[in-house]
Image (cartoon, rainbow, N blue to C red; front, side, top):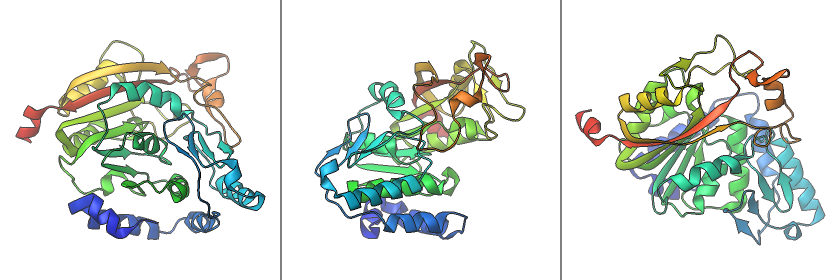
Length: 325
């Protein structure tokens, strides 16, 4: 569903390698890809009479734009693409009540970042593109998201099927799948990803290398309450998640960033995760925050660790460090 020629033009010297990498990733068999691709063929054709990217619920079309048969087909496709982790979205009057009310995070992030107009932006682990679509309201030059989970990638394709946003892409790739792309992006978003990385310092170094001298890293991650330069390494699971490796204090995170070549480091927000922001809905068919916390003590996870708290940190490349690397 990517216009190849336009993609190659937008991605410049990296267009061919990224296009091939995405095609290879899609050609790797897994248990669900064929079914997801089939679902997308069942999307009804429609001409949305409304687009709203600056609302909490990204809105595409009105209910009156579809007849009852089209509306039923669309709802069937959207439910077939579950789980919807990020959102909310409203498609032709159908409200997708995602597990995360991502608008709350965007409200914490957006006022603290440099303007995105005419900038090249990378979103690492972009899920279904909710934040890409919110960023698109600022008319950046390029929005590139990477998301290796096929269900979320296909959700993006379903939304973009109606939005047709120029210069906005999601590729089914991991950070490791990207070429070097040194000093190419003006802004890199890494939100809800760092604690899933086995080597957070290697990840931060890679992100710094991808930023222009005047670029900006927007980092949102779990943090450990406290003032020391320490990090939690869960023995097995954290909030029932197996793939959580390191959760630093804010001070420790700032030290990581400094060691990886960043300066002008600002922690602009620290917020505990609440049931308003993350909860079970009909659009995920699985458990959520309420079962991840100790039922007798909501300040602890079921494993006994501090309950989820998230910080937003903004940083820029240290140009002296970059010139030496």
